[in-house]
Image 1 (tube, rainbow, N blue to C red):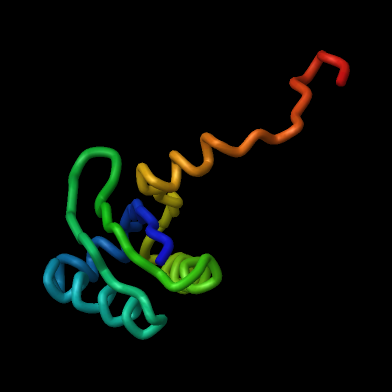
Image 2: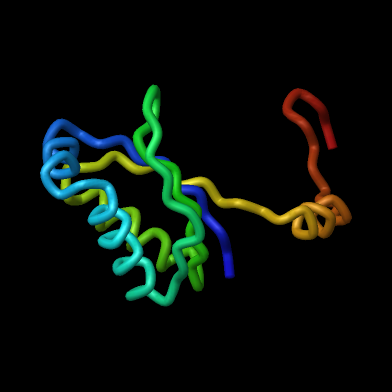
Length: 108
């Protein structure tokens, strides 16, 4: 299953909801949404500084991940960035591919 890193930042509305219900309730809500789409919540960690949440999610496909991110972002309570994660083995396979590419400013 493809893996994704979600980086979330709460809006003022989201922070108020988090303070009201607590962190465990937030993790449970995210896990329910992920499993409902056929995925698995691998990690869920709160942070402070520039970002509020880091979570790694296994999802069946990119469409499922896009649906989750759009749904979460659509609430207005959370800003979400999604990062596609690759395993070392996937990068090994990618490094063996040789695309026919001409850099900008050079002729083919």
